Image (tube, rainbow, N blue to C red):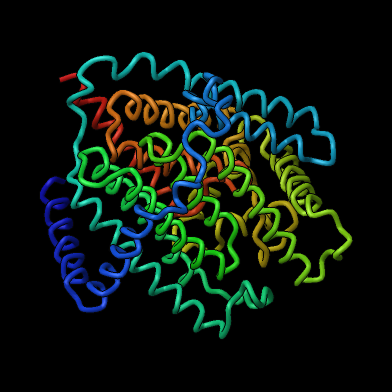
Length: 426
């Protein structure tokens, strides 16, 4: 395993180095360095609110220390339920109670019994390797962004109808910009922790990464990956002392606003609503529809499930139907549409209420272990990987954790955390 890792990172480092030496990237980084210097020394930067802006937030212990605790998944899921326009069924209410209880046990109780000693023996990753991997992932995503635009003959944000012509084989690599941003931002955090760059420089680089993500994902008309980019930057910045608490709160509000705004204007463009419609209606109706889907899945899943793992397995490339298309077939016998099943939709239809208990406990445990390692070590890499899996857990509240690349992120996190647990006992 170590031989494969060292060989792979060696190749990726060489590719990254060659790109950095090229005339194009030398010019780009020279320009960015100049802009960064102007930013750091700018008079107008001094007009920006300081860390103590909205100081009452810092006095709240929950906000200050636990705003990104794994339990945020439960609170946001509950908030999503409140958006629904209709009342939940009794069976679904029981399923949700089981889900929340299992997640609480997995995230808040079970982690207390592991990694209490030998935390210094965890895996350590070279910063240059992580930066090179992240840099190459961003390059790949940029290339496929232009390929996606070329294949549909336009920009989906400006012409929403062509968004449905985008091919997953081209758009999936674009989403690699999310883990790429995570690794590059984490590398900048390490530079800040080592005193190689100032806090202002780190903030500028975080903003620049976020700007690239927004430009690419917004033009393609995707809301969920755009919110993922916001969340990852905010979480890494918060735990790395690069982003202030008040900026987290404002950033969260902007993220929600972006979801509502993009959804509203897309619906106007598709003529599904009129300009007199309440912008919040698009969010409420989406939540209502998604929870109606979950209610149906809960009904057919019962206590022990219907598909017994087939729904999760359908995320594997080459499957006849993707997981969200399979959900469409299960509830409406329509395979030409994709339907989001919420975080527990796959769990209940695959393995029923029993599956919900087991899988939510496992998910909670993964996040709980990640949170514990991050808090104890303050290591740049573990801050980054926790931000990645927490981000997709939060987004999965509506969409579910069903995309193959997201499942891969969780698989990598699980492997790393298990190795850390084993090493801590030696």
